Image (cartoon, rainbow, N blue to C red):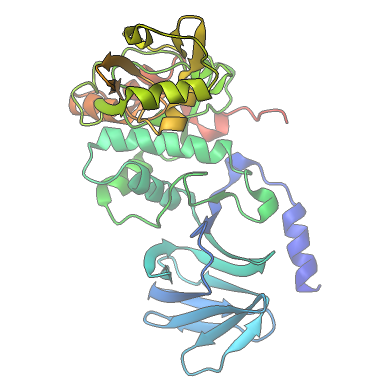
Length: 379
């Protein structure tokens, strides 16, 4: 049977998400360099160009991949360059590791690598074991040096996101990208605590009241109070409700301040439709003791999420006061404020709360269960 027909049959075979043990990740999303360098770090790989016999490559060997006229030019040691449409590099042992360097940035990965051009763009697709991917996401999103229960929390959140959006890029030929558009992933982690956090929570996800995977939203710091989903994204979720959080208020991102001229602030308001004549500038003052949806002055109102975006503020949780010719914004928190507060979760872990208690504190009425127990959502 021709190779292209075999590939087509594989793509048409449906495998339930809960039965998956590997994930396909697009690497270096947003980079479209003219070249890349693949290096074997450990194990043994096999290079298949689909139009020649496979080439064995071992530790220390490199493959230089460049692009010319929308095709790949592949050069290996002691071999002439070969032009092809795609390549597949597969690991042949249980401990295969490789590095990929693009535009001076080098990351390390496990599993296999597929490379091809699509509509003028270079695609590098890494197929790796799910828990290895989860550990990499924890490292990128949560960082090393954290308490094990915080890292377990991030593992369950990352796994929930992965399974919920497993087919996000399926029409593009992969599952997820490595950018924040999906989840940050800079390759495998060699941190034993992070790897252990992923392994100890293997298969665990967060389910809502209807047993479907939740939207596992998180942010850096809530400033002492998380936001309801409907106040930020317009749609409500029963598990993304306002939570008073005393665990993050002493953290580094708990408070911020920004100053601008009164002329600049009133100019912005007029641009957004404010047309009231204000003789007393103090009428522009605004206070948030608890989170609100809109900035209000007189009969004028403006969504806080709009102000945050336009002025590049750390959060929507701020109060405003006019002081002379200046406007002082005193804010709390960092991020959209919905779901889990990372710095609050770190504080909880340090105080002895385990990852299940942390998750249940920030997500209302959820259940931590194995992915096999999740109900598939109707399309």
